[in-house]
Length: 204
Length: 109
Image 1 (cartoon, rainbow over the protein chains, first blue to last red):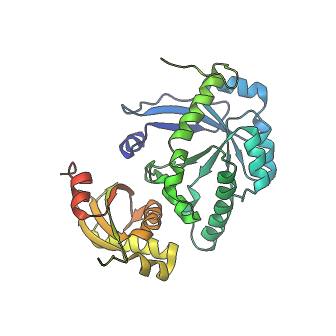
Image 2: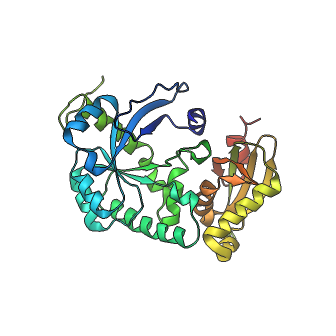
Image 3: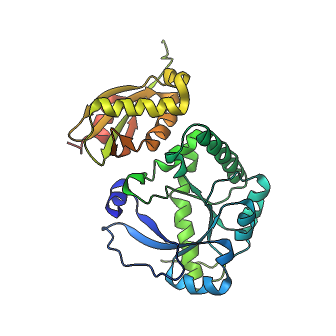
């Protein structure tokens, strides 16, 4: 799967672990592909003491939300990234709180591949509303294919193409698969080594 | 000088995951486009399969330039052709076949 990811043009991929007790296993990545580890937590699990321990093992700490209530709860934690486990429409008020929290938001495009008909129409309606709010408030968004099997992988430049289905020009969202993920990793690395917010290590 | 009402765009595609037949690929592309945008959308897109090399898994599809983003979205949702799991990678898009072949398909052999 990593080889296909490299072939499709990815330079970095994040592999996900969902068990807090597990450690990231050793993987052999193809040359030219960087692998980072990420852990997905439920908002109630994201306690500061646990996050401090997990940050030593994982580069990115994410919180999954399946409802608006969980989403608001996740925004009060110190995770780096929030995503919707079960898609729901994000309104402008949710987007404002997200914007103030300074967290990244992940758009998961995997459900689009597996549903059709009325379900698909409903998901696109939710997605359209969420994307409108996210873009209005300039929230840092990361688009992900959430692939768990090789055939679910999508080339990085093809990921924003899905947004044509919600009336967004994909060319305006290329940053969601390039600059924003890079920025997220930079922020996560800074947190990992304990740099205060706003301080950057400059390489000359 | 007369202006063309519908400009065309040519897409070079590569299939990753296995060999598929030309007819199977084309019916899958049309099916997914039809499912997403309906008969009206399909009629406006003017999709055409220009060529498909089954051995190399490389195809060229032409589309009306206004429907290009919709076709790319549809292609990114296509994951199965004739029961085979595949990934479609868009190698590039061009306004002429000559440019498409020289820019994106030269290294493909």
